Length: 145
Image (tube, rainbow, N blue to C red; front, side, top):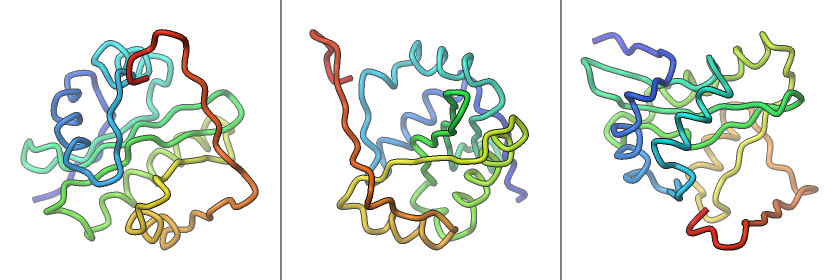
């Protein structure tokens, strides 16, 4: 079968959530609700993609931009379909679409203990940034943001 890489649609949400929940190193939060993902996809039209084989969603990547930099989130491939270039294809498609918008740099976050992900991303040309520390703030009252 030919694997189709196509734009992530909100109708892919449930299958993507199931994929991400089974992926090592992907942390699910309230920010991944159907409503939140729909808003993200609307703000970042044409940047997020899924991989589908015979009707089965086997990979997903959320991608967005702040207008200066791109950001990849929740890039995952089904465990039984890894090591076939699907993650690379998803990331490259996102990066190509960012480039088309004049965005020349993209960031992604990897859980520090996820050595498999760090190895994968390094193998496809991404570099760890030892000079940057991620800091976050959550609004008061947020649950699992």
